[in-house]
Image (cartoon, rainbow, N blue to C red; front, side):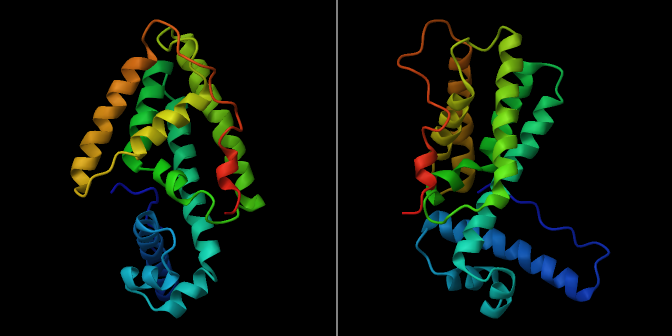
Length: 214
């Protein structure tokens, strides 16, 4: 599957720090695979998949709670990174579509779909949560200004689109990517269609209940 995290920079780091950076990248990649497959899996399964000792994992992540929190925060940072890049595009519609494509390819929203409610977010994530909301609103505003985005689409609707794509999954990772891109293309076509959408749009906090610890 596409990844939400970039491997930590290792160039120029002394031996132990370079090893720690490599381990951190391996742990996060393994955690993503393990917990998306089974959010109830033990943290030892992550260490086994990453090929690191359990003590090395616990030195970096003292609990499963901390690891899950870090994994989801990592995904949010990737979302914000792609949003910032899209805001640099001079064409608001092209920027929005490119943003959706990159976030779907990065599989960011699988984390929200599968891991919401499995841990308690802390205040450290709040600035990135606020920034994601601001950036999404600006992306939608700029796309509306082009006249290509239907006027009744709201920032919250983008979350529905991204989660719909994240729900598409088959055993073959490459085929999953192909199918998600196909679904996204159909949804993007609907973003510029005429006619009224049924029902009221999602409220800003309508899905926040999922992040309450189960």
